[in-house]
Structures are given as structure tokens and as C-alpha cells.
Length: 562
Image (cartoon, rainbow, N blue to C red):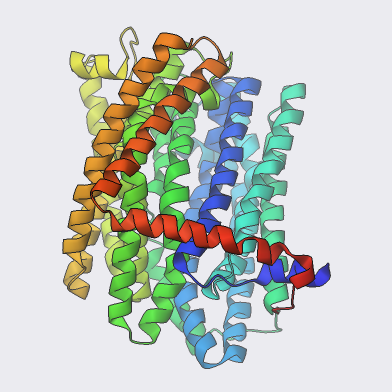
């Protein structure tokens, strides 16, 4: 049993697609738990002041983690660790130990500062909160303060595991985190005290770090006494790290901006924006980010060997696979937006107006799903090339566009409360007086398109040829399939409505399943007629994965890979 456990937590993925399937499958399961968690939250506390305060309390700890760790430490650490591991394993482990020690000290101090200055920080991220609502947000922020500390340690463990293509522990850790929160919601819902949920967040973050820490130790990680900041590997990590801290992606800062702006709008705006954002993050995480995470260490190793041709082929193939998944999913999400919202967060405590607002927000998010999915891949291509400056500049521009667009739309809506009757009709927003919250997802999608466009131009300028011809024709084929899927989903939904009532959860689910199955079937049919290379590759990879999946689980066949 011990040997099988070690093999499970230290097995290496050999193919990018196989690794992406593992990461994507775990991400899907984690996200499913996540949306179940959101449904429980709405059912327990409703969309109002309590959930507004809860989501606002995440913003300062999340901003700290996003600024210093997420998309920062890993992209700086993985290329350096991978390069040193190929040359000298002993020195590579010294670098890992030094980064771990530094992260422990820095994040520990930062978490302590959040506790001390929780009041001023919360007023910054929720300027519209007052009275009991503000006091609750401050109290919850203090409870959340050490969650970024545990996530930072987990990120160090996960980065060195990913550098060696070990993804299983990283796949399990989010499940532990979400399960902890679900337990906290159940307890908090019974008592009516949301503080139990915040405690569960903290415990879940600790569990997240523990799972990856155990795997890292099994792989060979040890904390060594003393560390030298003068080590060339450590210096190289910090050289890549510091420029990156100024390049927070719009996906990472969107919830912070949503909290700032939403706190000044009608009660529930912060919660609704967060809920819609968490729903749309599911396909982006499963079908976009999972590929970027899986391919990044391979990018780094390929370029470390000087194989620029291999890097180009890998970049092109992964880009086309992400487009193959996210273009049709985005189209189908636009059609089924209300059904998705009703199934995920549609409890008795969510009004029909709130449901329609959340569905409209999801539709705006869905238009840019493919751009959101490609952005992590394009950014990691720069990081593998050890260029952190260009993504930082472009990310900063995108954030500024996001903020300017959001405030611009809000200013327009303050003067002209109504917008195009056609758009209002399409989004089914008639009768809702305050739709200002929709400025946030609309601005987010605009900024996502701009960010991807600028990354593509800059990467072409830096690297040269990006296999644009194959990517372009892939977009044409997949785009045609996505358009067909959109119309078929609409027709399937119209057909299902004639025979199935939407007054029950089961009815809504069956309607959505009918429309989804018909649209996906039509998409794959079109892809087959157009001889899509991505469809062929995906089906072949899935078959290979299915054939191999029994072997790692066979205890009798298990061998020690440590």
C-alpha cells in the first residue's frame, strides 16, 4: 500500500495532452464542487449583505496571493528549477529549499499585516460598505488572513512538482480545499454564522498545502538549513520574479475591481458578480488553464535544449486545442446561460431578477472564454523564453482598459439607465431597473480580447513565425462548428421547452442536457466533415488515456518510482 501510495503521488506524466486531461479532469471535479459550494452558499445565506461581505473579505488576501505568488512565483521558479535539475540535482534542491524559506518568511509577515490592518484594507476594497456590513467584512478578512500563507507554501511545492511533470498532488489539493469549505457551509448554514465558512477556508488552505507538501517530500524535497541569496539560481528566480509582480492578469484582479465597484451599487452586486465569475471560470480552468499548466514545464525543457522548432509545434498545437474546446463551449453557454445559473445557484433565496442579472453577466463572460483560455498559454510562452517584462506591460494595459471600460459604462448607465431594446430583449432584462453590475463582465471581456491581441503581436515580434496559418484555419473550422452548435443549442432548447416544463430543477436540467447533447453532436459532426486535426488528436488522446488508466491503479503492478 505504501509503495502504491508513493507511486500515485510521484508518478510522472509523459505527454502534454495526458497531463492536461489529468489536470482538466481534477479541475472539472474541483470546479463542480466549487459550483455546488456556491449553490450551498446562496441557499444558506441568500444574495445580500452577508454574501457581499463574505466575498469582499477574500479580496485583500487574494490580492496578496495573486500579486506575490499566483502566476508569479511559479513562472519564475519552474524554468530555473527545470534547468538546474537537468544540470545538477543537488543544487536544484538547494534552490527549492531557499525559495521555500524565503516564501515562508515573506508571506508570514504579509499575513500578519493583513490581521493588523484589516480595517483600512477592507475599506479600500469595499468603499461602499458601512455599519454592520463593514464590520462583518473586516472580521471575515482577519479570519482569511493566513490563507495566502498556506497557498504560497503549496505553490512552492506545486511548482517543483510541475517542473518534473508530477501533477497528481496538484490535482487532489483543490478537492481537499473545496470539501473543507462545503463542510463549513453546512455547519454555518445551520447556525446562521458565516464565520464557520471562513474558518473552513483557512483549514482547506492548510489541507491544500499539506497534500502537495507530502508529495514533494516523497519526490525528494527537504528543507535545508540556511540558504544563500547569492546562489545564481536563486538570483535568477528573483530576477524573473520581481518584474512579474506588477503584471497581475485581469482574471486575477477582476474580483477585486468587482468588489470595489460593486460595493457602491445595489446590495447583492458583489455577490452576483462573484457568483457569475466563478461559474464562467469553470470552462476556462478546465479547458484552458489546465493545458497552459501542463505545457509550461515542457516549454521550459524544450527551450533549455535549444529546440525552438519543438517549442513552436507545441505552442501551435496547444493553442489550437484550447480553441477547439472553448469556442463551442462559449457559444453554447450564451444560449444556456439562464439554465446554467438556475442549476448552479438557483435556490429559493435567489430571485428571478437576480437570476436574470447573473445569466446576463455569464453571457458577457462567455463571449471571451476563448481569449481567457489562450491568455495563460501565451503568457507562459513568454515566461519559458525568460521574458517577464512584455507580459507585465501588456497585463498592466489590460487592467487599465478593464477599469476604464467599467467606469465608462457605469458613467453611461448613470446618464442613460436604459440601453438598446434589442440587447435588453436578447438578455431578457426587461423590467430590471438597475443593470449597472453588468458593466463589470462587459469591461472584463473587452480587456480580455485586448490582452490576447497584444500578447499575440508581441510574441510574433519576439519569436517570429508562430504557425499562424494552421492556427488561422483551425479558428475558421472551429468557429464554423461553434456557430452551428449555437444555433442547434437554441433549436434544441426550443424543442425541449415544448415537451418539458422548466418549473422544476429536473426539468431545467433535462432541457439543458437535450440542448447541450444536440449542439455538441452537431459540433463534432461539422468538425469531422471539415477534417479537424484537433478533433482527431483529442479523440485519439482520450482513447490512449482510457487504455492506460487501469495500470497505475493496480496495486499488484505498483513499483516504487521514487
